[in-house]
Image (cartoon, rainbow, N blue to C red):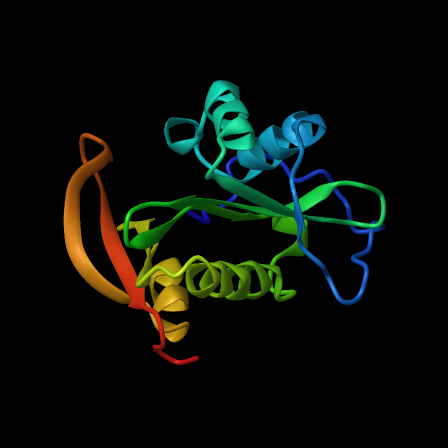
Length: 170
């Protein structure tokens, strides 16, 4: 899920977002830019590999979405993985230089809409337990903690499973 900055930002203060910021489905050609965003947003032990990204980009049911800046930099992304009754929001990342501009909220709204479009009952995700500000952000958007996941990322690094049933706060 969304995380703190793990590396230096790219100094993209001169790049701008198109208004409104419109998500688009990612393509295989976006892989390197998606992986760069992953590197900037997640600590190494929480990052997905390029192979995992490649898999999500090619999987028939997975959806990878992104938002580009005016210079083509991927400034936000998310991976959705529909399952039997739920939509798993597997990853949501916002470039450090573009945080607090509504990109996460835009992608989260899209995830909730996709839950409805796909006829699923709820959206679920995991949040690192050591990120209370992110946990609170999801709670402000209608998610509830469901279960504590000890050692989820690796020993000593726990998570919370959160969910938002379809229809809550729509």
